[in-house]
Picture 1 (cartoon, rainbow over the protein chains, first blue to last red):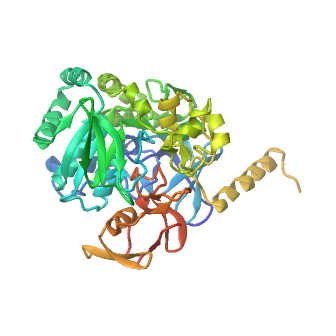
Picture 2: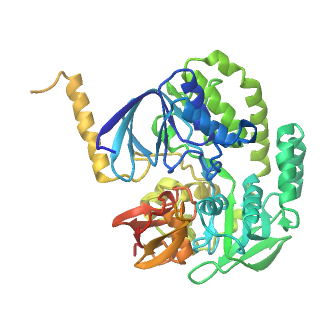
Picture 3: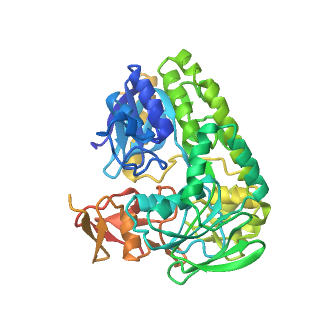
Length: 440
Length: 81
């Protein structure tokens, strides 16, 4: 990328997962000049990462992922991968950087489809190498990590655990156990909710078949991970008793949290941790839309519906978008039942011991954090959340552990290079000279 | 395209499947990516560019998130200590 390159799009989409891809394709198919930006090296997001590119096979065999990839390609969307947005130096201008340099992206309409990340909770030993997120280990395997013959404990909460266990097993891993912290009665209620979403029943039954013979424990969670230089074993709580299991990997995540840093930076109102949107997926900031997980954790189906609505609405085809409202209502209902089922049980607050690091970037222990009354105080006194992840990992953990409100962001929203940041003052100087008529 | 490529991690050659990320190369090599401020070994956690635990120097560029970079034949990776 050349330095200080600038690109303008009628519609700019941030995030290349299902919501972003469907928004970009629907808008571009209506003739808009559309750009889509993603931090990863290819489109697809986390869920479609590593899907085989079967663009040459006939339509009937194509997966949903490759169908949307085709539509993005053929509709003329400009895909900018390996590029992450770090700042908004002026209204309708975003500053982004990649490994080689930085650029400015300008737009008339913006669609935020920034997705979600896994929620992590601290417990003794969770910082050992080979303790990964559930989605984290899956992403690594999709990126080439050999898993055949490896023994894996899958733990935490949420539907992702089953999907990950099934994926790893298909690739030859031995799943020692799946530990789900939710109770059997909550899981049973979710099972009933499935009947109102027939399209989810077949994938659910498929998962059940894929996982036949794999031990599954509800009311179960990791107590500690053990090892010297890397993970060797895990102690889990099952049926109220501790049980030590030797394993190569612990895949552990506690459901998902939306990536709302960029929406917050742009000034979008957030409610209960989710970006507020109206029927057309418009945020409280004019010309800025939001779709997918940042508005509610509802999975790929809801993300695709919301993405399409946002893309059509941004392209000025709101009428057409209305046809999708009914489907969205149903998918949102299911999202709410997921939230209820996979609520974290209070016992998990006592997982960390006093010397367990909660902030992994700055190695801040649980006992040091416990002395403070707010996220801000903890940041000021301990550097918690001040490392390169900017609180993306420890923020949600402290929200759960201490009820701290961590919804605040400052630019840049990702660590950025000095030369990228150096471009900001020159631009604001330029603008102020324009406003004042210039100083000679 | 060859199905395996070789990168070096702290000077030692590591064979990885083509298309693998540098984070995968680190785990295959059995090497921690970084040493934390209190001296703990750390490896990839999120696998998606959020947690910054997998950062290494790639071709001399420090603080690269290894999960976001694909391996290239002959790439030199060094850990940050």
